[in-house]
Amino acid sequence: MGIFSKTCEYAMRAVFFIAHRTANGGRVGIKEIATGINSPEHFLAKILQDLGRRNIIKSAKGPNGGFFMDDVTLKRRLSEVVEAVDGNGLFTGCGLGLDYCSETDPCPLHNEFKAIRERIHQMLENTTIEEFNEDLNLGVTRLKK
Amino acid sequence: MGIFSKTCEYAMRAVFFIAHRTANGGRVGIKEIATGINSPEHFLAKILQDLGRRNIIKSAKGPNGGFFMDDVTLKRRLSEVVEAVDGNGLFTGCGLGLDYCSETDPCPLHNEFKAIRERIHQMLENTTIEEFNEDLNLGVTRLKK
DNA sequence: AACATAAAAGAGTTTATTGTCTTTTATTGC
DNA sequence: GCAATAAAAGACAATAAACTCTTTTATGTT
Ligand code: FES
Ligand code: FES
Image 1 (cartoon, rainbow over the protein chains, first blue to last red):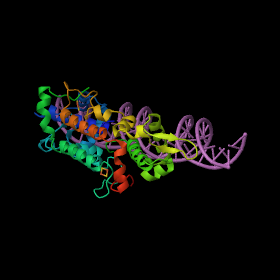
Image 2: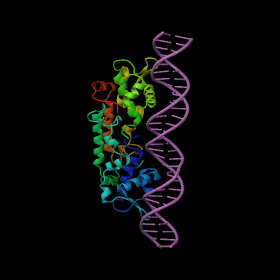
Image 3: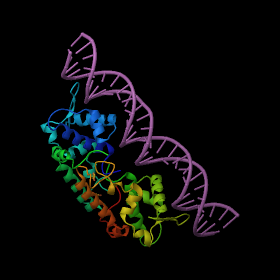
Image 4: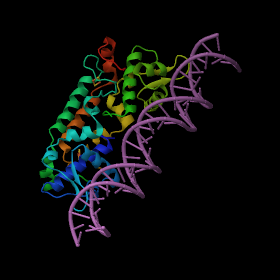
């Protein structure tokens, strides 16, 4: 496994995809998203339902419905997506799995882990969803395969 | 979940424990290790069997038997433990879960992920098992709770 | 109002991870 | 050789993660 759960990977890719696809208005359906990010459709649907409830993305039912982003959700940071799906264990937990990561009673790798955790957190914190549309537009980066 | 699987966390804590406990000769039994690192005994046994087969730790059956480290295994790096248990996906895989992490066809966060991955890898690469006995001896760090 | 569309919700199955228990094999000391 | 010890191995059991399928609800169109 990678750093994040599969669920979280799908969530991040989907959020990028939706933002990119609806930046200039309109909505995008679950089928197109699933195809576009290479994920199982119904499983992704569950994930997006959850992100919708948490106001990280927007959705509308019925004809011309689909998922989209508004001014508020476009400003969301990737750290909010990760926390919503995987929780904050990655940012706060001990790398060796001790019950509590402690400054006064640290594990042998505490300082190293702490630095890495902070780096990951900062990367996700500094990344708002809308920032990546440009790259995706230019075809510099991808969300599939 | 944290960065590593539970199995991997137990493996790392156990290896530190064994190294610390047998640095001056002797062996240590599975019960004492499990208690010492706060892990389920029989599950840990499986993990240690595997690490033994991979020559990351040593073991001996029978009276006065147990787990221990020799000159070779003490020089093992933590990265070898992690790779043995969790594979190298953490060091090579795409953070967004794309099938291949690619320099020419990267995901939106490729550069950031790459830097973080390298940092994790270096930390584990630069950490030989024997280096931590001192801290554990002094009670500066811990492996339990 | 009737119909079509598309997400939401519900109810599963499958697979992987984590954890437990029992039996076997190897080694030591008597 | 025999008994005691301790890891190795095998066979499960429980839980969580990942994935699938079906039904319901909301909304727009005619
Ligand atoms: S105690 Fe292990 S990372 Fe802080
Ligand atoms: S392509 Fe995603 S981390 Fe390299």
